[in-house]
Length: 268
Image: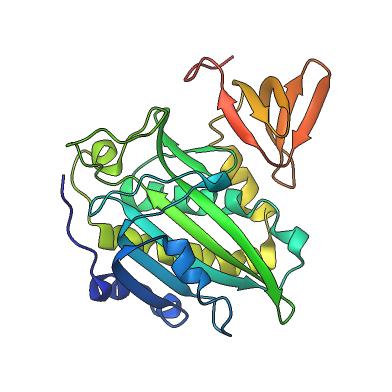
């Protein structure tokens, strides 16, 4: 299903006045990766508030360098640059905070109740809807700089099945009607910008309970590969955003890694 083209003026018009003041928006037809376009600003003195959207990515990527399927004209590919006046360790769990920010916004604006899969995926009814990629850049002038990438399935083309190795869905299917990607982009930019400003002062705890209420893995049998496989039952996250696993040897906290769900879709 083809959606309306991304429109710079319509997205800008959807931003709140305070957010519009700090956003430098660009919309492209085709890029290699929206994250890479934002990274090109990293050597300048202006990174915070740089937002890039594209109709198509030819080299989109997810976590651990995996390719992110990015067909033209149907989905949403958005990246934002930001700077925090925080110590690097204070950014721990930021992807969880972003997940909670957007889950709350989607519930409010689109009546969609998202599930959040640690550390950075959006799910609906057990199917993947999108994901987040946070890339930390070298510190500059004492500030932590990063690029946030967001990919959402909006109206996945039906002409050819996408090369996605797990159950997936898109927002058109979830809502049951076409969705305006310009409106969607504005909702994301508004809420992430305000959320980043809150994160600066309130940190992860402000978002953690909201994330926990949508924890997709909680109670499921999982395997974490980092660096060797660890199998057990997902038991939530700790105050730093690390995944807790109840394993035969006892509970342990996992700060990073790839999580696979055993008996996918079923709770243990």
